[in-house]
Amino acid sequence: MRVLSGVVWMVLTANAVEPALAQTLAQRIARAPDGTVRLSFAARPGVCGNGRNITTTRRGSDEWENGCESGPVHVALSVQGHAVRGIRTYVGGRWRPGTADVTDLGAIPARDAADYLLALAVRLDTESGKDAIFPATLADSVEVWPALLKIARNQAVSRSTRRQAVFWLGQAASEVATRGLDSLVREDTVDRSVREQAVFALSQRPRDEGVPVLVRVARTNPDPGIRKKALFWLSQLDDPRALSLFEELLTR
View 1: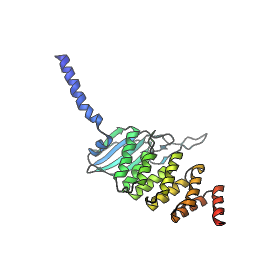
View 2: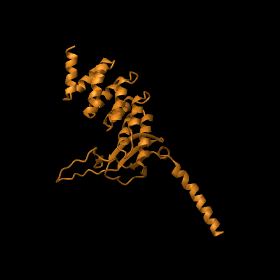
View 3: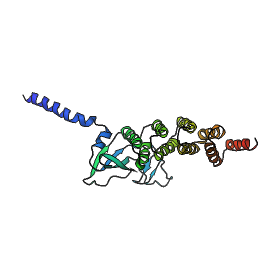
View 4: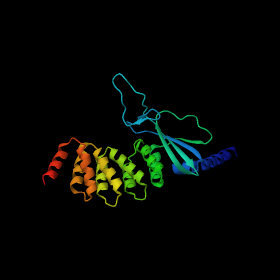
């Protein structure tokens, strides 16, 4: 009977724990009471902070080590009526002791956190949608650029969120991301301000990636305003390919 009782206890315990483990991060946050929901996750290499200021490179010298901690990423979600109303992001440091209205979810897998934040960016039509993108870009070992490209192209998403997606897409260290920006600039169904942000993002890419695309945009894009933007950003770059394009246009 003792053995049987032990088996029954194990089954009941497993049944009680399994639903909690099966809950998605979104479900756990949606069930939280009004107040603040805290979560933390691993930061990608090169991201550090002192609790408030955040940088993507460790800066120092041979004789000086600054106080920049390499993570984790801490996100505080302001929740009201089971909906997220605000987002604050920190790297390094530590949470102050919570009050009764604080729900701390502890350490979350970086991929789960990034997926949740990017999905949240799509859902929110306020400034908080834009604020959800930045912490997602800090997540360790997560490739976010495909989701950012979808957000940038989604006309149902707020303009500020789409522009933020384009900005961070431009920061993605990948030739593939540059190709995505190129296609985004060429899509006349995409909002003008978002396409202009994509042109700017191209100007921030490494020159061997960004300059050829900007030259092509300046030559061939059907929108005169977009061509003008591409020419402006090319004029800010000390690159012989830009000078050759200017000479070509001026001597036609």
